[in-house]
Image 1: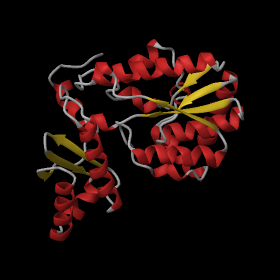
Image 2 (image 1 turned 45 degrees about the vertical axis):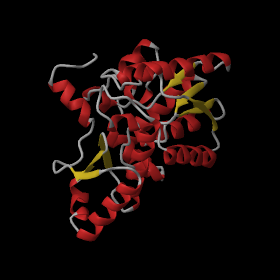
Image 3 (image 1 turned 180 degrees about the horizontal axis):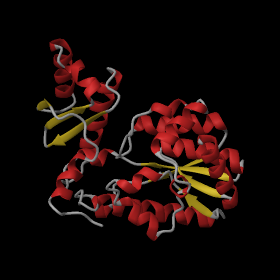
Length: 272
């Protein structure tokens, strides 16, 4: 079953002939890049966004993987886009549209026929405002078209011995900040440092949501128990204080994908 899906994906990619892939280093785009390399050889190029709201360790991992499999890899330097400086509710749509317009310009200049991305079949079930921009700009999503789900991707990535097969999902750092809040580079750096600290302590799927100078830690159920130890808590609060937080709190509800967006959706405020 999975092998059939993988073969279908390979055959579909071959029809595209020459592609640029928007490569974040996450499990979806990593798996897609691996398949595209198999299908198209040198006719694939990875393009990664380098921005203040992308964690540095994600950039480093993207470089490591492209070098490992021998894929051409370019970076687009993107500062915080003017339209999203106040973190509006439609931030994801505005940002995706800006970024993919830049990638389209690059693809045109370098004679790449298509731009592909790692949107998968499960993504249509979630609140994904950025998909509106992908549709408007005619970005191709092979995993979605071939009806490949997240669990399919993880299983096939494991079969292909890709180290990212069990990598937790990791959204851009802007998702840690409430909507209608001015975005500052210092805040983004603080969030990245805080989450990297928690990850280094074994809390892989974590989020540090920011409310002014208050940090609200979200952890998975498996990791919540790790923070109950008094010494661990003390080390966390000391480190968070060192990097600029006045208060450090733990969200007892645990990690929730799109936490800030959930509240806006429930209030009927969404962009699509």
